[in-house]
Image (cartoon, rainbow, N blue to C red; front, side, top):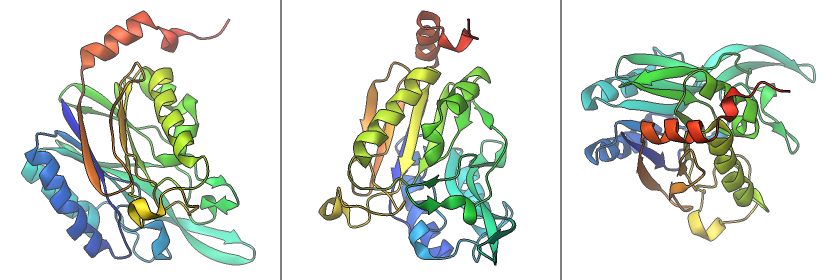
Length: 272
């Protein structure tokens, strides 16, 4: 099965971002992709201000437009969005939190995975404005089991192993990774490691680096570093983007997953 990771730079408005991502999804589908993964924060970039003002449930404009597109193209689309969650007290202020959600739509699906591990690191507290999710998600696409994670989740191998134990052969990861000293090396290491310790394919679609190659390596917030990547169960990087807008493709071989798990049965290990 052919998959695609769509790498782009989204902005402030949901409608503008739909107009940006829809032609890229169409291009990926025309090139034969059956599963098309778009970045975290596709509906609204993290740099675009408050997330709660445009957050909407899966019956809202963003999700339904992509649902209609997925039905038209007969593909599965995974794309980052934000849904209303709850109110949360921070330093005496009441904030409207959202869920950081990966929309999963098409081929009989219309649901979301809510990011479990919020990015509370490096003096940033995503949990102030984003409520952590609780549930793992694995969906079936033409007999291929697909697990879903988001960005910072990739630092937690237990989640990827559990998705694999629940049947996932491919784990898709919408991402908006920060740039800066050591960040690209960390991203490459983590995306490869999660493929190895879950013995699964990893398809991680990231926000492109704002400013592209000219800004590469400079410190930034969680607004994108590019380098969307597809890794096989043996840790081989099948495709990797650069810093600019790009689409990368690879073919998923379920037999390769089963063969790798047979040779390296680490998912069966329960401890001494």
